Length: 377
Image (cartoon, rainbow, N blue to C red; front, side):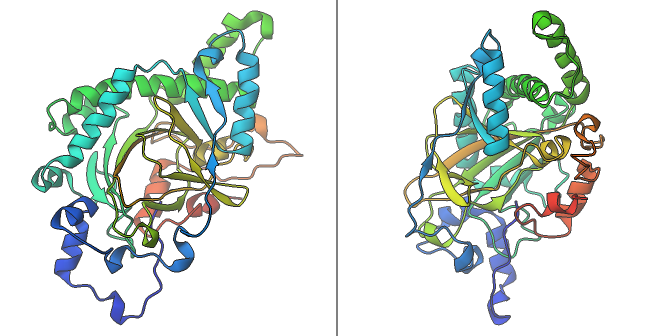
């Protein structure tokens, strides 16, 4: 998810310490001070920018009706889910059971966090990628040579008792809104993972006539692997940009976990790469955009693919999104499921864990699918 190296002359790379400090305070702060042009620190090489002359088509993602997934039409929905994971790496979940109030409160409190004075936001600033709560800008500002037009608040959510005391207390309803949303988001992730595990055929079930027993087998497997799994929430703020054609909110990347559940407001910005084209995902109110992460690609031994995606910005409106990245517990090793390895389909990936990923991103700018590529056999 890192910003890529900008090709410049050595003299152009010399930025004063005061400028570095200004940029490290984030894009929101930069906009609040008043700017008419995008600073050089945020300008991507022409080859990496969003081509404003290119007609970017909108994409209607495959839709998974969560309510039908729980009913008699489950088999057909599973087929659609498998096809979406294989051919798109993305899908949209509707009728997911999370209330409109919970969703609206989460988007609202996220916006209000970034609307607070810099003095309040800066309480959580850190360059430590392992910090339980981290307010920052770009991807890894200590490593990125070109900054992305994005500020973020990252929060560990995998152990609520340990995580909650670190969460911001302002706005006053931040913790309550986040707690309720996190709880329901985790439940939705677990139910989607049950369906994905079923599509992969890695758990022995007893046949269609024993649906209750099959449900229990899937629940037991997913609970064992993911109930205490990692959950990182990333609240993104993409301020309106005076020259959006020169920069990106986030450059092309894949996500490291099993699944990312993305909640976004009504402003367009998410694009995915499909069949060599960048396509804009149209926001769908009260739905979740779900994408396959690197860990699921490894676990499925390449059957389901994590897909490059990026965020673009615009000149008129700020955009807010909340990404929930779910995986196994941080101490667990992620490896291809043995049931998906045979003579015709040999092992394609090395074992990996969260520590390996953190070490990887702490020493370099992460580009596209670099980390996953490093784990291929």
